[in-house]
Image (cartoon, rainbow, N blue to C red):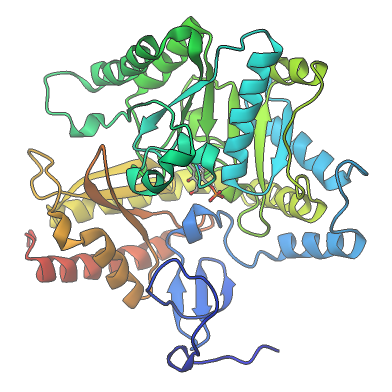
Length: 455
Ligand code: PLP
């Protein structure tokens, strides 16, 4: 057994940590909790990075993985087909919008996005539309760390160092309608933002545009951004008008987190391609997928095949984990629970925003929820950058045994927000636990940063 080492006695590490901040060594995890090697318990209020949707240590998933491990853990896809991949593709297709009948497995979110971009392009080439290659995306947004996914990511700090090495794709503003102070209704603002895509298509040259990629419900880059309903409908209309493929990046919003299987299922706006990962295997194994309709896949196969793939694609162990995760989501009714607990948690966050007026907006769906800090609710002006509120709120929560996720998005939209996205197994009582800690955290933050509190 691994010898446990108290956090303060740890030797210098050879691991390449991306942050100077060292965190304790994790020891074990169960349900919504994690324990470090000093025996301290923390609530996983962000499901890792919005990954562990079904919670930690699920026995049925672990048993399914063990059974698969005893049979075979790797067989290369050019040598064998495997049953877990076949079964998972069938189960996933049943849950996806009608016609999304081809599933291409990968090992993570960036690979899923890359696969969508490359299938879209190969489809265009195979169907005689060689001039179409531009993929418009939104600013801010996050679609992954590999160079193709980064080229469609709207997050300057992440992409700037690499811009000479890639062909950055055009961006249109993300639909931050909640920030607008005009006389338009929310529905009118939705149309206004969607029409910015049409402007973008026009200025790029409609014949050169291949696809538009968006997160139906934003992730960390925007803090669970939800557009007005009119936006989704209009985006679909614009894509149809110009023959442009609509790609939904459901890496974070998919697999039930928002109270429906897909974030996009909240609207009538069927995409042409879907990227899935994170909650799809809930962190039990690295797994992602592209879902595509046969009408896009077949021309590519007929033209000689998809010139793309990864060694671990369709890995039997990862697919067995994914299949067991879908079983657990159904057996435990987790999508309904995410909807109900999400409503309860959102109401609690709104209540906190009444006590702490520096919370200017609470948004999201299901258990993909965020709260944004402002210095003035009327103008929605952000807090000064130097207060570093987004990092401080995470640190204060961590000290009190709660993990949350936060960002101060740089570029298009400035503003500190934090996300509260616990596993979908959460109970009403555990939400109370999270909210009590958040109340203390926000009190402390207000005291430290001299922010107003309503008493
Ligand atoms: N797309 C979205 C919306 C994401 O939130 C993420 C990761 O946070 C990715 C893509 C990239 O996924 P991965 O880190 O698994 O490559």
